[in-house]
Length: 514
Image 1 (tube, rainbow, N blue to C red):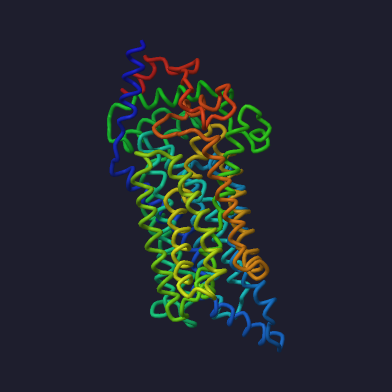
Image 2: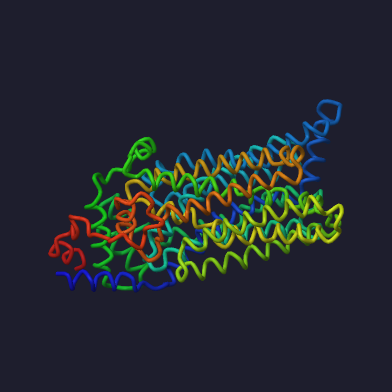
């Protein structure tokens, strides 16, 4: 029996990247995660044109121009309402994934993008700033749903040795979305006064491609088996994603997880928060998801142009400098994606947040002294690029992967609701407050982000264990250890088998494969 379990573990680890697995990771990331990155940066380049539109509309309606402060508030609302929509969308994740499944939720939330695109695309023609704001809010709802559901879906369809690689695909497309918005926002492309509504509305294209192809691929096998008890559907899905006819070991592993649960019913957010046995997991989700946004990355993405202008970059060169940062994002994201299964989650997320903290302190020093030392303006640009690179190499995608890895099937939706809603609340806070923080604190506003980044890095080092190449059961056992800080003592933890392994009787399982 022991020999059988050992061979089972070895066989389960040896998963490989099949075409269906790669196709689903690319499609779901392209049509959902990419839109998140695109909408983070899309309002950056045409900001002056959007403000001019708001001002002209106000003048036409009320016979007077908007003053500087109300215009700043209105534009800040346009930027940050995307995050409010995201926070609202994240609250529905648990209900949606339980009712429609992971893939089903991705597909059924797609119409939101088409509604938002129609509103934003026709806003200038109809002279309605409200349509821009409402459109940003609706596309934010879609991103709030997809930002949690896509990592959940990819994490559940991937073998454990590829979970990090596949799980970081969305972060690559987030960076690609930012880069696409920066390129299309150039004055020579769509960054003009006549074309900025099309610039905002083009989000419908990736979503259309996604819903045209994604329905042909299976639902999450883990959802089909544990939530729906659909063994035959699970076998078909596993055979598709794994590229193997014999998937008995994978089904047994899922049944073992199902047996270990006190209940197969999906728990609520309140039940998860009140479960003291999951204190460290829940706190970890809160810290890494809030830290992801409060690290200052959204301030960089939302206001890149104004940051470079304040750093002394010539106005004509700002859009092209911004595009250069987008290329760095993609390179850093690819480095993280291709190294996460070699070096693990902890080094990437600790190193990423630490480097971001160092660069936030550096940009503060550079901005303070750039008036006296001319070359400091170039140091400011380098530190901004460093913040972006540090973020994309780990903190951009790993919080979503780790949110799924730290919890069992019944608790995973509630964990994504907590992490997602706090992630978006922090996103809104930074997007709305940063312009005023920058006006009041000047260069020293980046020290706030420095402190947050370093705190998250220290927390992960002390508390969160390495989850690379481990099953959900093994990760759960790490936190079930009597040790108070599982991150430091991860090497001392012995992984014990949970009682109830092998939930399917071998005879009934064999019958299912016939």
